[in-house]
Length: 150
Image (cartoon, rainbow, N blue to C red; front, top):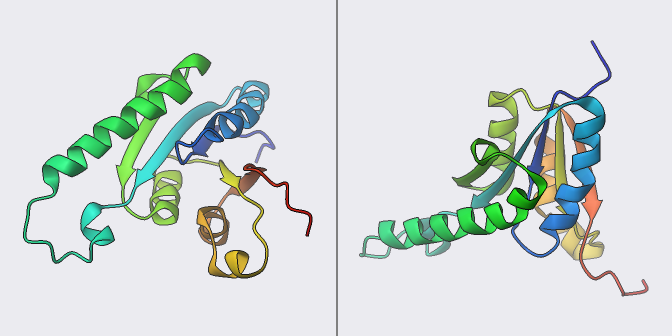
């Protein structure tokens, strides 16, 4: 088994920190001549509202999906990430990231981490969830305003 990564998945939340996460992954992909995929997970609207809304949320979900694809392209396009390697999926982030990684033979997942402490760390974040279920390496890139001196 080689030490090189062959397929890197960058999981982003579409905030301004997403650029930093992608930029950390790019040189790793270059050095390893690896395929790079970028993805964002949208939580399903029905889940957010408890699923008992009597209206059809499909058109709203489609609008959110389109908006997320636009935002993802704004992050990925300047770095020449091909359209077919930009993915917006609906579901719970850590579950969908693990599923994508297994289905596409990903051997490194790069995700942003806010470096939370105490309760926030206990309650978990996407990066913690990704780390715990991953069958491959995970790189957590420190992001966010970490001005607090703890």
